[in-house]
Length: 339
Image (tube, rainbow, N blue to C red):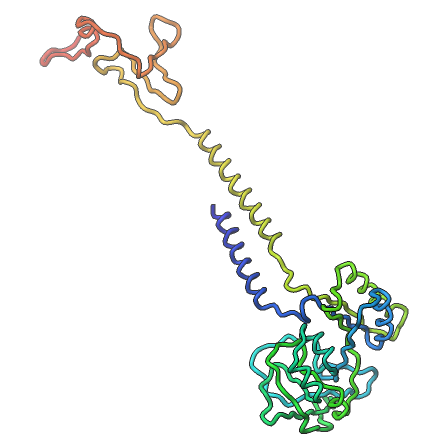
């Protein structure tokens, strides 16, 4: 019973953890959309291969401004761009930093058309996510590099038109092309997106795309990175296998305990109770002790076996007073010595 109770407690705890994970889960891109990350420098080759595998499916190029996590080929300095913002407290799940684009990129990353965001991008405003609105409607972009183990600012571009969006997005900001030109850092291709409104990639298509992207870098010794194909299908972890295993273990333990209890009860002696004592008045000499299904009595002096004993429920035969006197127990009278 203790093992079954432990399995039940473990199942309850696992179900609670699974529920909390489902609540905390944040999709990398809108559910149903696809993100294809090519190896560095292999964007054109991956685009050609994907268009061959999925003819007619439009691809959205996601170009980014390099940030603190970006790397550049060779040993040259890699510029990075950051914006002066006032972020809300809490953690955020981002797949990339600052994306350069317009309405198509916004729909791909948000999973829907947002007229306010699209209008701001069309007007040349930078859209910042997860931050408080800038007080004067502008922000400052800082271009810097890493030198001697620390960040060194190269340039500050001030008074960039900006607005804040309360919607959650997998990026820090959307920058219109005109603002990117003013910042002066060339964007670079980071990934291809397939909008769920255009096409939903199946598991078979995802497997083929993964093979194609992995095969792009084969035979090229200068390619050290591998690509990736991610199709957002939502929270997918399930506790069904664990729950089935726990249920099977609990059933086996319960069945084993029941069989052990049955075996012990069969091996234990049954209840005993006495028949009449040998010298009880009104009973035949030589009593017996009865156990379950069996009653034994002392062997008869005249016979060679043990006479059967009548059931307690059987009626007792009538006896004459003479018989009662003969079978009455003998007790010597006071003052008389027995021989």
